[in-house]
Image (cartoon, rainbow over all chains, first blue to last red):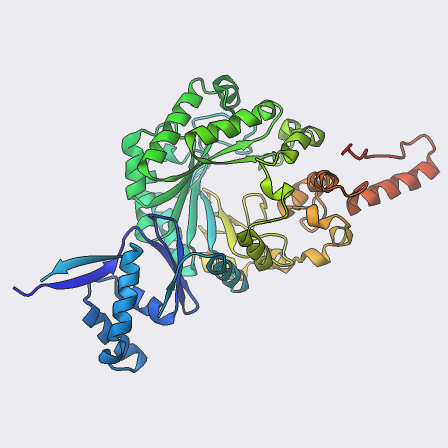
Length: 93
Length: 386
């Protein structure tokens, strides 16, 4: 059985989108976060549970770069969101 | 890609962007005017004249999400007299609003508080009128309400909500304001006190007799624990940044703030009942972007308000266009209450003999009247002692 870590938005987070930005409030500590255009795109994608590799592929197709070029940035970004409890990490098959 | 944590800068950018783009960031939604208390200062008619249905409110919430709303407050009336309150909160949670509720907490136990937290309610505000149970109950006209409301405060705290208790100041409770502050401290919750008592929404102004006379609010205004920013020039960066966001506009009403009544009426703010449209007949975005009434509200600029823009003590003034409308009939006019408060604050800041532009006009009018009618009183206001 192959397991992979998948990521999705914390359902307790509140957010709004306008212009090319997303503003997210963490329900746990009431902090407000601002995501830039790329971050907002990733946030949108995490309505479903996705791996970092899948997220990197989606970013690549949206912003005309290769998945390899963005994987490290996606990794850092997702890790930061997990640390802030805005994103949940699960182990799926 | 980046995710910046909260800072004054993030808040200011969010607020500034929402004002520039007219995004209805903050929505105060009274889902009912019905209530299980009968507070003596309440401005609402508690009869149900045809509140929006569950489906109608859900449709409005969908529209608000599409318009960019983030901060949604459910208020009333008492929101839990609606049988569908939890259903509405659950729906709002699925739309990812940041949820605040205002309640008297009478029916709240630990289970309800936990459920609200699970439904994404982050903040709750409860009206507590005094630290003295008898005074509180006399204001709500419900015996035992103090004990039940304070129990609810504790349940909400234990459930992890951010809790604030709010107290409008009236002759009945102002004397106990220090005890109220101590109560908030003991409960470990935020608090607010407000001397603003407004007339009823139907135009009945009899409630204004419950306003605390300004000269009796001096001690409170001087109390550094209550209003630290009034007594300390080291204002918080956050507040300073936000004031820049609202540069030259009277307030957020109609810019990034909107009020919705249980009957679908849309106003710029609960304090500014200017009919902009009705959600039973129009879509929210058509009202928000197309209403001539909202356009007029948005065009108002502090620097262009006829009398107030010339006032020498403007920096001490918190003129509310809604109060100006209800008191003087002109949302771009002065507000007697704001003038009195500004004069008092200016005096506390050691401004010599501060008189608002509005009162100066009144004085001059009185002087002219005096020349014509020697028996009339010349001085209409008496500056307060420092």
